[in-house]
Image (tube, rainbow, N blue to C red; front, side):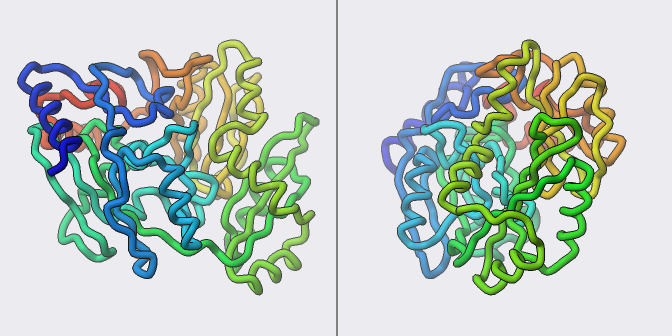
Length: 373
């Protein structure tokens, strides 16, 4: 066991003994999200490096503090990638933070989420025990897949120290098509395309500021013949890949002008609304601007005051979805208040039992997910 890992385990053991809360942090690029950021910082960036990489097996094992950009560069050298396009939100994003946050980029609706690519991981639990779950192949688990449970837990169940990930080859062909559609027409068209054998990879609809109008961008990825055939059948205006690639990255990292406009709207927070892809245009509260729509209709970003929480959550609930506060008003990090949508009593009990099993002393990221989390 190397010194960085030993020091991490000892830090956790000391925190348990002194009942001192720990705030697990890599690059800090997602400090804006969560109900509260509490405790002494436990920096994971000393846990760096690629443990193993087998391009022919499409598997990489990497330590949690490794910069995400470094991993993506390594994969690119072999013509491979993380197909779920994890957001960076800044230059310091780490692999451990990527898994802990469980956030995926524009391609998520077509290729799957972060958790779908986690084959196994190593973590330090709330008893200062070093545990391993899963492995380096897809079929490696009998029972519940604990390694994937850590995706989206926001560090509340343990300190991730190492992760094994499935990677994929970069698709041989790509094209982005542009369409002039209002939101309702864009959603209907995305639904129709979803029922056809098309190499859909990502989509983004945004209001262009005019009355009832907007622009829909659809990215295709796959075999060259399939992409070219889809371009012919779908129509639209084909974009230059070199020109739009930065825009897709900006969509992933929330640096598009639509996201930046929130700073010019005093009192507005950014809300993440997850709904079925077939859901119609949401009945948003009066005065709330149209959303930015991703994931073929399943993810809708909304800018609205925190006071609109109940109305937004009810609008999402009406179509079988949920709404949560992603970034508070003008915040680098969120303060106390409404963050996540209400959960059922049964789900709350499951969460409480998981917390008790993995972190009985409650030292990891207290309050990050609201309530006792």
